[in-house]
Length: 291
Image (cartoon, rainbow, N blue to C red):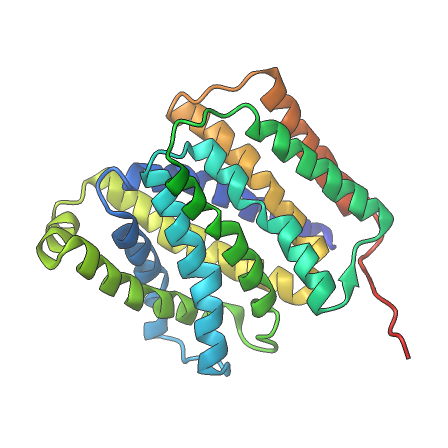
């Protein structure tokens, strides 16, 4: 990857890590469905100025339901029901090995030996981080949270089918496609009056968090992420998302007082080391075609 693209990938990971903290703050006032709907409604604002990209409606809906609705609604539900922010950021990054595994099956791509070693080291680091986080939440909330990395991985690969389209336009319309059913879900599950009152009495802190989640973490960061996935193989881009738990856990420790000891710190450094190996290794190699 070009140095500028590596910097973009790292920046996106930092933004996404901080987004977990913003989500936790917003969920103190908003339900998971309403918070997620508002997030995508804000990110969909550019639809007022850009036309729908030349992507079929079935593909547009499929990407939106996996990469956005499925991933973020399950995240919001898990965090709202007690899953710690640090652990949530770790679990979601299970999408990295899932994406690479699916890319190998669907597109015939596989990592070089050094990249495979880097992936293994990073996954080991995430497991080390998992072992340091408290599990004071329900099994049901954790089960719903597990939907997030699966949806993320499927959405990553579906996104690659949207070729030769402006990524910014595409992501704006993906957000709109997710926001509509999410608002409908909020009205059904929360009720029209509580939904209206929650929006009317939103605090300044929650408003700032939602603007950051919608405008920066979703609209801008996912546009950049989509460009990287379009220009590079999945195994070169996806590993950078393994930085998200590091940022999310560090931010959570500052904002919410979440503590971590030597094992968790070692896990963070292990994740960074694994990513360094993947970045410095040779380019991703496709599986040879068999006659």
